[in-house]
Length: 298
Image 1 (cartoon, rainbow, N blue to C red):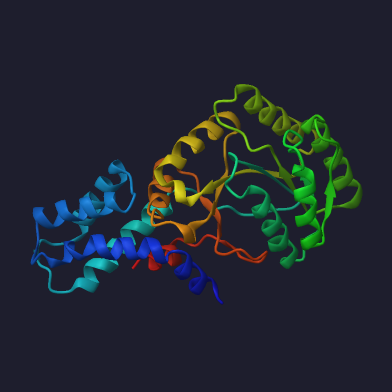
Image 2: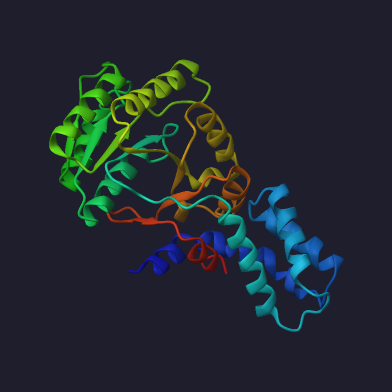
């Protein structure tokens, strides 16, 4: 199954919601204030924030000439163009090696699974990968990561439960340098954003990478559960404030009708979506593509 087929499948619930909410918009005969009011309501109903929805409507109004809605497809194509613009506000991510990716996020978002999929992704690019068990806080976290390391057939660096996560990162960097490893992927404890001490721990881990591996490209990705919709924005704010996020990885998109929140996330936070989970298998992780995402909504 190609990426478009996978994204279309993952977005089915969101697409169905879009179709339902947009049906009344296109029942209006003329492009005027009633049309734009209904469009605004439809966008908000699709879990796009009020501010972003208003920007989308204003942009569409500037592009469309008021008159009869003779060609629904023309309106949709113009709307698609506008949505793609909102998704493309953030600079795209370009990879260089050696590469360090630190994965953060709250409990239950699928972070460990995503790390396994990410390892598989880079292996397909013929890159050597090592996983780093930086979650020493949760019982059996390193064992779970080890299972994914085995599935992906990559190395893992880990210490015992309760060890200093920054010490694990330090050792992993030393190992990566010795073995010329292309990619280090660091797991971190699934932490609630209100836990100040755990946020400080993340900052410390990041400082270790900056200090010990300045030649590496260092990216911080937050893993978000798409089923939380707009509520995920507060998670982005908290983690970005602590460690300056570089990208988002979306999971569980196929389980929600709230996929529209991705548009306001990218536009308002100017943080790109790096990857999107499109299934349960180890290879079901794809680079995010704005145009194909928007096509999947219609």
